Image (cartoon, rainbow, N blue to C red; front, side, top):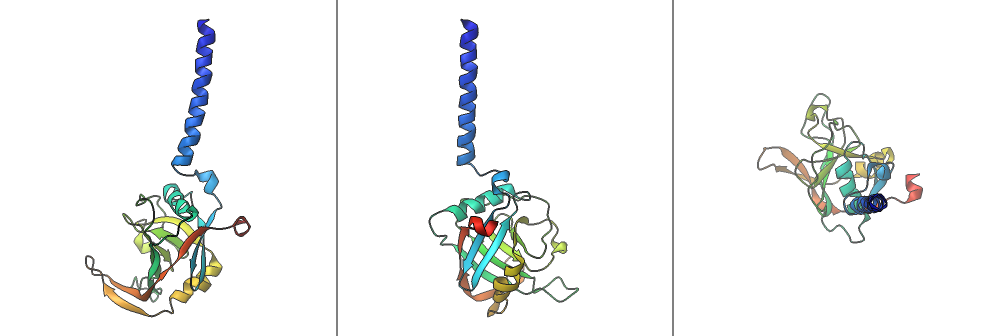
Length: 201
């Protein structure tokens, strides 16, 4: 009797653990295997920016961005506001070679992840913020200071992203670090969404 009872308890425990595991997956974040090969799309008035997610480099950040893109409500804080062409050869800037913006509607500030140096086309989070940038050059001199979580389609780098380099900007001095930044005269809001299955194929 005792052996049969113990066996029932064991089976019920396994069922409970399986249920808990599924609930945890749904309430926390989507796993690496489910995000591999996925894309998100930033839609601006100048066109789309398709970003291949890189969960192998930054799983928690990718999960947070994917969750934001999957929401039915609009990202009211999503905007691009800084546009800087790459500096002359041999110079580290300014300008600094980036297109910067905000994912202000993220549920929380993502952690710093990975040890990847930002290369041209990479999408990176600025540590301890909800701000991100698209790298317009290889930033070997910045080391692994930023979380690389995505990569922009090459076609969009030549198209939509390049368009922002032709927009009017003004210079602003960073109040803490003294960095001279080139800010867009008019901030550009964007929407973020999941790419369709056809677009991901």
